[in-house]
Image (cartoon, rainbow, N blue to C red; front, side, top):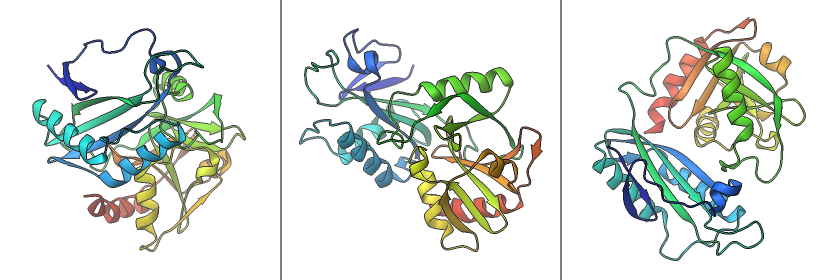
Length: 279
């Protein structure tokens, strides 16, 4: 049975560690990181912890002096070893505030949970069968100071995922408050049009994905020019190719959205160029 860590201590999977007064449970008061561990090393580790620390600052957590990326990374690796998953694991590091009501938190110290799950062989490889996407329109993402964070208020994504499952889509795209493409339930979205690779700008409300940022940075050294911009539904449907990215699956190409079918020749070349830079 898997173990997990809560505030530095190990517990068996399924053990209750927070009570009914916890603000993370009551209000979704927290933030999380999803990372990949390969052969005992966290992929893009510095970028993940930099984003986490920015999020903690935005959510006005009081970070203890003894807290550090190095401490958390060491605990992640130790947990993966205990769970016999150090070869390839998905890691979730969740930070929540402690007990209290809306106006009377007992303190603003971070409480944290670390979980790991084994990843299947071949994870992150090229998906030979392209994804089928739908567009979720019933709840829109706002564009504000919280939009780019991986915070625990995840209801639009949850509802979109429920519809994707019902409609038998592989994933669903969310729209922002202006009705433009934002991101998917678990990934950032890119479209290929001619020689340009476009993705929603952070001002459009998408999560500031680690893999998204890495791809944008690496594409600047290739023949394909990245641009952070606005993407309408029409832009999506008029694209030559579409792909999604996140820290677990790297890049996955999209076969179709609505009645539109996409190619994958450029995406496959981008995948081949980006993959060696991930580590």
